[in-house]
Image (cartoon, rainbow, N blue to C red; front, side, top):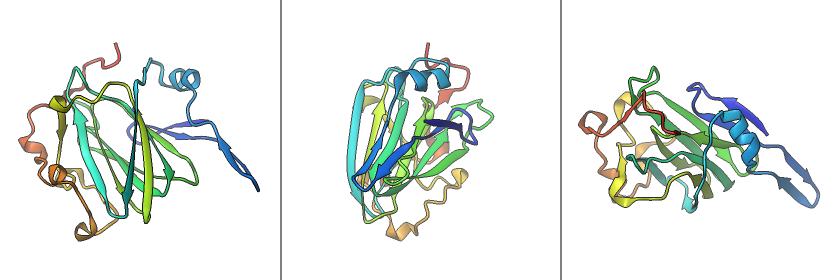
Length: 191
């Protein structure tokens, strides 16, 4: 596995080694010791999630409040997505900036999104199976979001807005200025 720090260094891109031949492929998708060695801190994943979506489905931008904030390790089993992480740690030098990476079923690339970040993705292929690990359980009462089209984030979702399909919840997320419960940059989320 090759670990790469993104333009926001706390976001990690993981390029696994894919072994393929005429029979198919084999890939090691997660190795706890190498992952934590690169990060320099412990992450204890406790829940795996999977979704199936069609072209244009946009899920996000989501986060959970403390004490249920989550880190995510995301990947695509089949299909293609544009995966986005946005820094919402108040005081961070990269506050409001984002990382956008194509994840797909061929390259098996993954992205680690730490606590203190929004997460969302849009499906670029006809269908997609998306899976991810989280290090804290889903807690609906702590679930929050910010509008996918927040102007200050300047995210290019690579599709016209009229081609996007969002849930009612995601269509009604607030803009950044209306949100009061963001993260503080000086908090140690992994203590």
